[in-house]
Amino acid sequence: MNVKMVAEIAYNISLLLALCSLFVIFPYNPLKNNILRKMTTGLIVGIIGIGVMLNPFTLYEGLVFDARSIILVVSGMFFGLVPTIIGGISLIVFRIYEGGVGVIPGITVILFSVIIGLSWRYFRFSKVIIKKKQRVIEFYIIGVITHIAMLVAMLTLPWETAVLTLRNISIPVLVIYPAGTLLISLFLSYQIDMFDFNRRLSESENKYRAMFDSTQVGICNTALDGSVLNANQRFYEIIGYSQEELKTMTFADFTHPDDIEKSKGYLL
Image 1 (tube, rainbow, N blue to C red):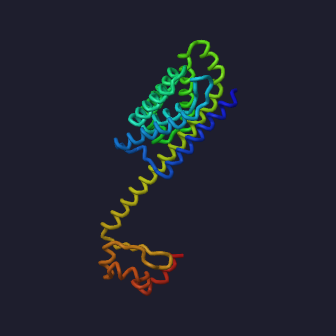
Image 2: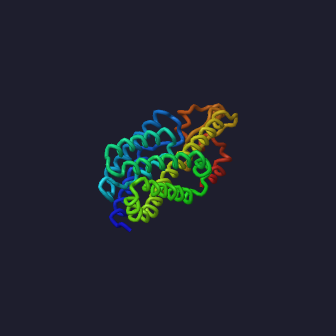
Image 3: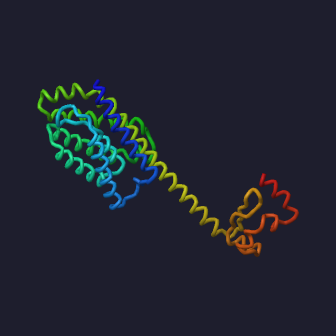
């Protein structure tokens, strides 16, 4: 196993994970369908891809390896068609600019990664991401498939070069790249889970608020010390106090004397 390649690719993947952490600071909702958002995401995918391509492992002059395949397959899986096409075109243009004997296999790897990622999104996204089934297995398998395709792309090199290349990179590619694909896919899937949880929570709160405000039953929420947190309009009408007045009161101020001790028991 090429130890230097392992170190360089591991660095590339760690750089990707660090960039993914930006989604915690600047959350991105992969479930939204906004064309401007998609185009912006595509540009970001391209910039990140070029960033990792600037830190490659060079096997031979003009034949380099980096984590672009991971970026593009994950982009296809999670961000969809527009961001992935924009990102893929950006990386193809940059790879042509770099030149060297690896241009054709490099472009082939980009195309394979885009196709595999988008195909998975079309056939499996709903079942795996939305329904949360077999994520680890699916993400790892898609990483293996993508990087078998990467090895196949090396056959576009002259035969002797292709054989030497496959001899040097096959084990690192099939060990490290799928693991990197798995880690980044899990990170983004948990990001989707967070958005989905917040959406459901917001919907639940809105339903509760609608019921709270529209019911003909008086409702009042109090803190443990008895102070009033909020009440609905019907409650104000029943007790005859305004919202401002109620804020200065505790439940004991508008509770029947016979019920005060019993009510205090509920606060414990």
